[in-house]
Amino acid sequence: MVIPCQFPKDVNDRVILTAPVSQTGSEDVLCSVGPDGDTWTIPTRRNLLKNVPILQELISDGQTTIRLANVDKRGFEQFIRCLECTKIKFTSVSTARTTLDVAYYFQYIPVVEYCVNYLDQHLCAENVLFVYQNLGNYCNNAHTYEPSAPLYNAQALTDTQARIQEICSYLLHNCLIVIDAEAKQILTQELVEELSYSEFLTIVSRNTMQLKHELVVYEAVLRWGRCQCMKLHVPLSPATMREILRELLYKVRYALMSKKEFTQEPANSQILKQEEIELILAVFSRPKTIPTGQWADMNKPRCRPLAQPLFLSLRTKGTQKKTGKPKLEKKEKFILTCLSAWVAIFD
Image (cartoon, rainbow, N blue to C red):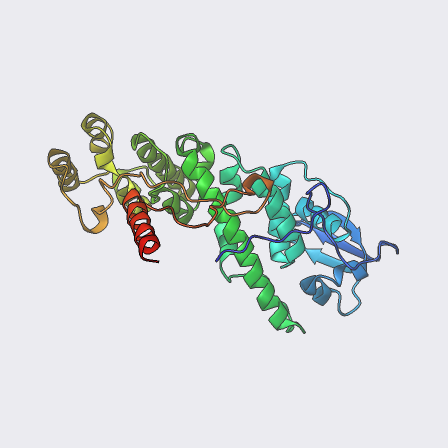
């Protein structure tokens, strides 16, 4: 059973942050954030940082400065404002997403929840790929931070990782639902070309994409492969494309195209081998053919209904299916009526 994130809210149903930190006192720690040559110096308070175990470890020896070269400076500035319980309002999805990266890096649940709530509330076709990109890295136990000494509350940190993994998995689930619902618009966006292999493979493998023309998927796969060739500085040849695309090449459902679309585009690309082209044409000739192996999805319709989003914000509130008594079929109702009448006669 999935349990939605429990955000503290005020009477206006707005997410608020609470922390046992006094607002009094001057800043006594300077944080140098960002890569060399492009840093921000962000002042903050020691008693504020002590609420974040990873940051507490960095100041445990009385340090007055912290160097955070691998942390986004704007995201960290927003992260500190969240710790101060300042009534912040993200100005963009971009800021909320970078703040989520920082909150994940420091494994701090309240700010992770705050960011996830905002991102889910504003999730749409125009920004879903930006939110989706790299989010899958937060849905497993991998974590880049390695403290120089064991943390005093290692078990608490493990529990925190599990909770953050759960929250981010909910957001990832909701991202994929938006991608399914707006597949044509999203697959034509340039940001598709910036996705990792596994991120893109997850999308093109889905049976729930609401898509009328499979050629859109093929064109997106082709663009993604060309972009990877340019990034890797390798020749844009059919052999190289096959090597780069790997399983993506077989996730395009060629038999869902019209025969004309297939012969004019994929069959002429020189990426598919001649025996592969003949196999696909044979499926066009015999529609009831059931392909096997790596071609098993070739003619499988993308017709499954959309999944239900998980409750993470007002946008997804009340969208989950309500459970109740199952409806009876007419035949079942008739049998129950007869039984009731029979019992009444002999009672």
